[in-house]
Structure formats: structure tokens, C-alpha cells
Amino acid sequence: MQGSKCNLVLMKTVLGMEKVAASYVKEIDPGARVEPSPRGFRGLVLVEPSRDKYEVAKEIEERVPEAEKVVVAEACTEADPRKIAEIAAELAPRFISSSETFAVRTVRRGRHGFTSIDVNVVVGDAVRRATGAQVNLRYPDKVVAVEIIQDLALIAFYPGSREWRKMRPGKYPLYKLFRRLSVVQMPYLGPLDACRTMGVRVGREVQNFEVGELVVSPIGLVDALQLKTFLDGVFEGIESRYQVQRKSYGRDVHRVPVYVQDLYQLVRSRYDEPVIVFEPEGDPISKRARDILELVRKGRRVNLLFGSREGIPEGVYRFADLVLDVAPGITLSTEYAAAAALIAIGSVIHDLLAVDREPAGEQGSRS
Picture 1 (cartoon, helix red, strand yellow):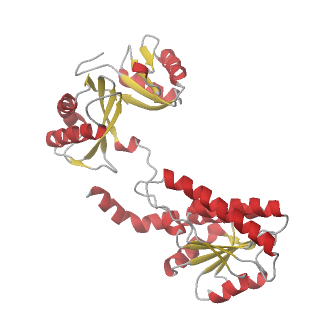
Picture 2 (cartoon, rainbow, N blue to C red; picture 1 turned 180 degrees about the vertical axis):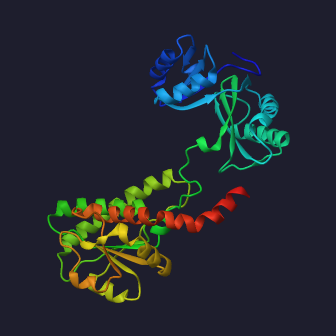
């Protein structure tokens, strides 16, 4: 199985699905040698087909959903960075032209005297010199994949378009939009357990989208204990989601600040800022995408008003730039109203924001 050329296909699966995926490969190619969890590494299936490896790989992709990724090895060698680089440089001109960009992706399994970054650097330099192509780590035209399984190294080449990425050209990071939005939420008041539960859910949702601020806006005289209980829930929800985001995001996370102000006084004090009311009497949000975009562009802060057990008073409608309905015919519950509106806003204006951003983003990704 080893040598500068090899007849191997590597499948990556969800942990625990190795044997299931392997059994389906045997149905596709009964004569293949199939090794689930090679060298004891879970999530992998190593296949040595009995017929054309490219045809077998294509059938696996078409018929085996348990296969997360299918990598056709163009060569295999010892797990030594210099040998890997030498072979990759020999093969690269067949797959990468001088006008294209590339990136090296190394996944190392087992104990070695080098790191994945070491391999990336050595192989990347060798491929660059062999092809004259430039490196683009974010959005490469081609990928040089190095899959190391203990003492075995597989080398593969595939288009960069095969990589699933959370952010890529044509996608606008909506947290930048949401940071400019102020969610104005009437508090849920009533039984204390319900106040607490609603507060937690509202807090989690506003933190989930990292909006600029949350303003809890009662109307007139309200029960202090009920309001306090709702606010306690809000802070709990914000904190729980914030801690998850801090651990999982590769960027700074904005903790949503919380304020309290009477609804009518808030509308008065922000008379010169864009205000959008979300109520069933409004226009379908999909028809007002351009209007929303214009409000976002011209206003440093855009205020989104949401009711609770009772809706936003109709008198406030006159002071709003827009009155919108997120889901005509459906009355959204208090805890989902803001989340639904934020998703709807992002959905209807995303492409317009992405068009504005893409030329500069494309240039930056190629530099």
C-alpha cells in the first residue's frame, strides 16, 4: 500500500460510524480492501479499491452519506515532512497552474517529532517553487491535502470549492449589522415563574445575535417584583449564552448591555433615530427590504420595538419609520419575536449588504 504512488481512498466519518461506512464501501466495491479505524484512529476508513479509485470515490460520495469527506490519495509515503514535500512538489504541476492559488491542509494523527504547521510550511514552499502559484490560506483555488496516519502520509489535491467554510466571498458577517441594532422589549409580566422563564429566553436570544443593546421598556406603573424577576432571567440568559460564545468563537464576543426605560419616554428621546415596530398590523418584511437597508445605512443605531403579552401601543406606530410583520397570519410568542425579526432582517437584506462588501473582500482575500 505504500510508495510514491498508491491506490488509496481515505474516508472521514462521524465517530462511531466507521464500520457502517466500511460495509457500504464493500457493497460498492466487493473486491476492495477496507480498513475501518486504521492504526486505531476513529473517524477514518482506509480503502484500497479493486478498480479505478476515482470511480469508487465518486460512487462513495454519491451513495454513502456516512462519508463526511472522501479523499483520493495521489501518493503515499513515510510520515516525514521532507519526503512529503518532495513528492508533493513532483505532483503539484499536474494539479495547480501558476495562475492559481493554493493552500496546504495537514491533519496529523499519532506522535511525531513535527507539527502540522511544520508540514504546511515545508510542503507549501516546495509546491510554490514547483508551480509558481501563490498561497491563499483563506480561499484557495486548489488544496494540497496531507493526511498523516501514524507512519503513513497520504497526499491529495482537490479544488478549494470543496471546502465548506462558515465565511467565504459572497457572505456578509451579520453580527456587524446586529451590533447596530437596539432591541426594545416590553417585559413579560405575570406569574413569577413565567417572568423568569421568559426573561432567560429573551436574554439568550439577544445575546445569541450580539445586538448592540437590550432596552426593557415597561409602560407606566408596573409590579416591581415581576419586573425584577424578568430582568434576573434576562441577565441569566445573556450570561449563559455569552460563556458559550466565548469558548466557541474565534473572535471577541460582545456582551449585550441591558437598560430600562419607559417605552413612551424612549420613543420621545430617540425621535431622531430610526424606529421599526414589529406587529401583525405591519407590512410583510420581505416587501420592505430596501427601506430597511436605507434605515441601516443612514442611522448609527436602529431601534426595533417588540411587544409582550400586550403589543406595542398603536400610538407609537405614528413615530415609527416602519411597521413590519415577520410572519403574516402567525402571532409570535414573546421569547421568539426578537429572534424571528433579527433573522428576517438579516435574510432580506443580506445579499444587498454582501454586494456592497464583496469587491473589497475579494481583493483582500487575494492579497
